[in-house]
Image (cartoon, rainbow, N blue to C red):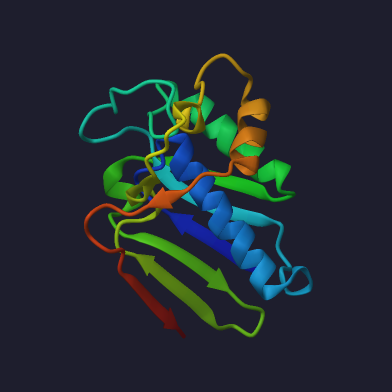
Length: 170
């Protein structure tokens, strides 16, 4: 494997970043460290939510109000995993609508995984203990938030519709 890239317009919450980390970590564990030749992941997302901010605060599903902090936390979380996140932030028209994970292999083949609604569609499962879903978006520096996201353990669930995956290898 020589390159990994993920594109998702809606990486605005700690939960969506934590889920992306878990997808990358799981993928790396599945294919094996020896075949994971690149220590970089390219992440493309947008600089603002087109429908306005998520109004809830200090939850794993709350939007970061400061997207520069989001960018720093995302980089710090990947760094904590030993991976460099090359972040590309654009507007919605340049980022594209599809949520896509692409993997380029040293053989020249390319895996394209389209996630119908991306990692942003999944949500934290309802828990009796509200502290499980608490995430302070502002009081800690980016590296501490990144470590928390990388270490986060949380049950998740989909909305009322299933997530469709489309997989192609060329």
